[in-house]
Length: 219
Image (cartoon, rainbow, N blue to C red):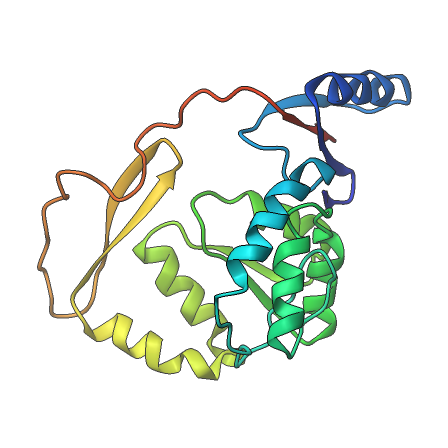
């Protein structure tokens, strides 16, 4: 994966990745870290999984998105069901071209990029790729409202979402990390309702130790 200037991730069998680490150090890499992974994502070892995904998608209908979706293996958006399915299948075994993806967003007129997953890894990468972008991470209710407000000048389509977030009483469950989960509240004016955490959160509270194929990050 081409994550950002100076950061590359490779995937494969553990022995091959370890050889890559040694070569990287010999050629002056500042850091070469072995990453425990459950699957060797975005390399040829995932082709059998891609074949199974292709068979599954044969019976799935995919509508063309209203807004363009950039596939990060091709750095393109597609306007047909067949092309979208092909991109979904190929992204399993092709590298993630994240640098070009973020650059493409900027060329298309994006001024803000919002990360909507736990953590801020992509936000940090995005800042390294293009310092002119307003890079935001949504990790709780407060940051969600801040992202909506910061993006409103160029996200008119989200104005209704912003209004509903302000006036409705809502509790938003967002895991702060893969290992923990927290209850975050959208502090909507005039509402103070709170709900107790569910007995079992919908995501794992712990991440199992993983073994097998590994990834390598070069920084």
